[in-house]
Length: 173
Ligand code: RP5
Image (cartoon, rainbow, N blue to C red):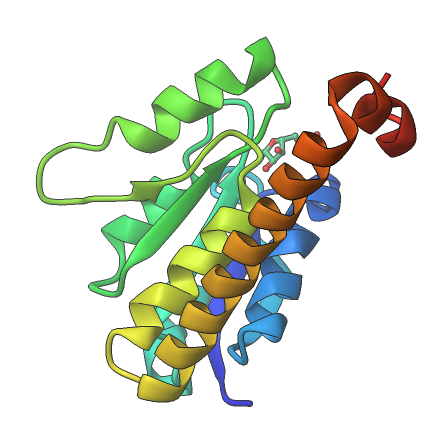
């Protein structure tokens, strides 16, 4: 698998959430690498990494940050490649990070997913790559079909058992 996605985290404390991006990318057949690089704590290294990435074959960046979350914006300022931002729920329930990530000025977009939305960031990166790669697109289609089937199985089970037994057996109450 060629490494096509760079996952950049403002801190290793983002890793419990962001490992889900790496995992779903692996499941979808997209190679990724994951780094700790901070817009505030390692600004120089962050910019150098972004500038070298295109020549290495990176096609999409995924950037996580919480608390004055500027990493995705800084990366987007230094590349023409697509950047996906993942606001971390580190302070103020992640609302501060969400606004910092999503409210980019015109001309420098960051595709922002949900607070702690590491998995969706990985899926979205695969979809972007899949737009130009039929094999990856096929993997995304199969992923979505599987998800649809799983939901249908759940509904069938819910109808059969009724909500009380369903909740008990799933350990949801
Ligand atoms: C951000 O500050 C990081 O992305 C992280 O979400 C947050 C807190 O970092 P730590 O203090 O846990 O290293 O730059």
